[in-house]
Amino acid sequence: MSNRTFTMIKPDAVRAGNIGNILQMINGAGFRIVAMKYLHISKQQAEKFYEVHAARPFYGELTEFMSSGPIVAAILEKDNAVADFRKLIGATNPAQAEEGTIRKKYAASIGENAVHGSDSDENAAIEGNFFFNGLERF
Ligand code: GDP
Image (cartoon, rainbow, N blue to C red):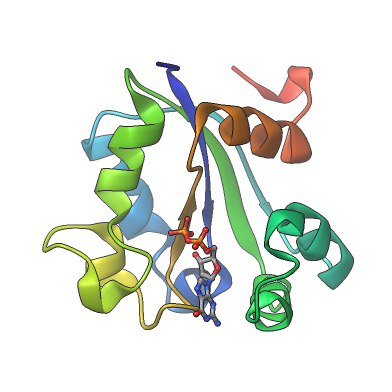
């Protein structure tokens, strides 16, 4: 069990003005912010980040979407961070997400689903390292 995970507030949620609401839910659920930045990634960077999904039919749509506007990227800390954060964000498809989850509240569709949350400790470390160096973590 690791105590860190990685998240992104995706372009749809940024466009909808929900950065503040989502950060409030994250802090309210007991996560501490270790690192955070607001940035607009290129299509190439999105393709690299989502390389594991390269064979999936939605890869083009996903990387187009993730590079369509600014995002907030962050490393979060809490006991059992990966699993607890996945619970807080809810199912990939907001139609199946539980009440009170971030995706239930703020996501519009399976593709444009407001937030990312790492699915394992290993990926949390890889994804955090993609965006942040050692001097950017507190
Ligand atoms: P997650 O771990 O809940 O984010 O879900 P996955 O790892 O399965 O998928 C990664 C991301 O790809 C999701 O968060 C969605 O943004 C996107 N995605 C997943 N399934 C679909 C789909 O069927 N269509 C589209 N357009 N995007 C999808």
